[in-house]
Image (cartoon, rainbow, N blue to C red; front, side, top):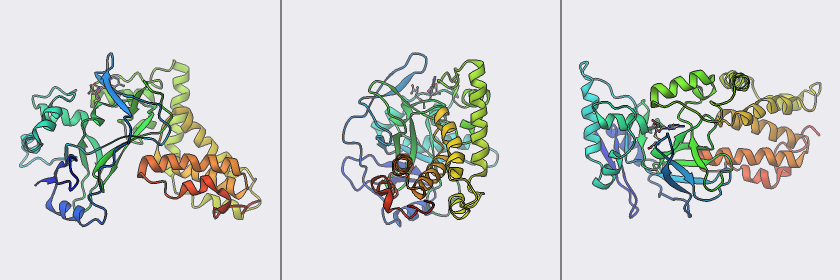
Length: 348
Ligand SMILES: C[S@@+](CC[C@H](N)C(=O)[O-])C[C@H]1O[C@@H](n2cnc3c(N)ncnc32)[C@H](O)[C@@H]1O
């Protein structure tokens, strides 16, 4: 069933969402749905041609880590997997064509101008496969994931060391692009098209995935390293992947260290630093790792009453929280007054 999700706010784009009717009911039952589309106050980007990469998005001003670059509603939202009916694959094409037919004319025209790397006979499917970003689950009983195509977001190119991330915010029904590194005016903005696991695979595997899915050869700073450095980079990513796979299985490491005085004072900090340094060297933002290890290092510095380092750790968490959840989760208070946190002095 096709659900045009109406926006009660004037001049805001409403998304055409193809979903079971229970999804619509569950969305409108949310307290904060639909939240207004609050876009950045200033112009943050321009779109222009990039030799060898079609169009790309560029910073229109200097951006700091955590700055919102773009918040936009997708023109169309669809289930990520469209089942075949009686083994007939053309059903998916008909389904997508019908969805796009219902997009308002101006947005439909812009949608049909988007890049199509697939060259299938079915152009709509090619455009969706090239540009759709994962949304994840929406509320309601439907257990599948959704994906959406947004017009600005679709112009952002990929890097395995991205300077921005794309996240989904259900209440405002928007994709949010947030800087995760400082970006100078005129620099190209990159996100990662790879999953959190794929981005930690060796260079050859990343290049193959991107070639198969998006028909281009990645030449980002990480994929163009000389052989020896590329091997070290693969090693760091493999280490991060192994840590990521075990994330959360070790219990509360900070609490254990606070209680166990036989462990050295820098035990938690050393362990976290290894992961943080590898993440920083590779320039990857994997939220789970980022949140866990910066929180660990921040709490440990609080416990040891290291004010400056505690603040630095908390600042990193604020950037991650803003990028991922559009809220700082209370961590700005720790940046301002680490002495008032629950961990202050617990190991001093
Ligand atoms: C979502 S679109 C990104 C915007 C696209 N460049 C355009 O002109 O609209 C994805 C396509 O952009 C191109 N692309 C993305 N990242 C690239 C990169 N790092 N190098 C070369 N081409 C890239 C590929 O053709 C890919 O299929």
